[in-house]
Length: 165
Image (cartoon, rainbow, N blue to C red; front, side, top):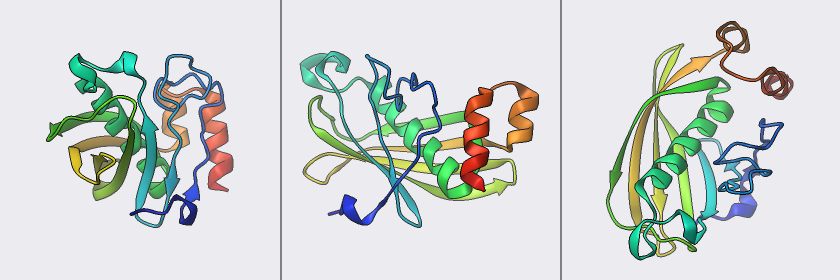
């Protein structure tokens, strides 16, 4: 069992709070919050019923979103880089259900180059069973590159730079 009280809460850089996965101000979002230890990023999420597929089973797109988000936060806070997702693969092992507490975990598999990382994630049900596994390839961006590409809002980049100081 993972003790959330022994983990470090992670700062959210989404200053507008509108991200579907982690934005606290998105009325339709997942409102994910994150914690970390030295090797893993965690989030506990309870997905509302309106985001399920049939029979209260979470839609695969929602499972993929949660996986992508925990891997993204892993890159931000364990590699200390801004990111863009290149690709993700999700293996759906067992059903996950709406309105239950799901634990998402993300970690670094390996750094391919200074500009690309392979990250892993898993989603665990309340009984402790791994129900989904994901692998993602992420482009790692410095604030300078993110600005040049124009892919990340300036306020988020500035907040990230203050976090790095």
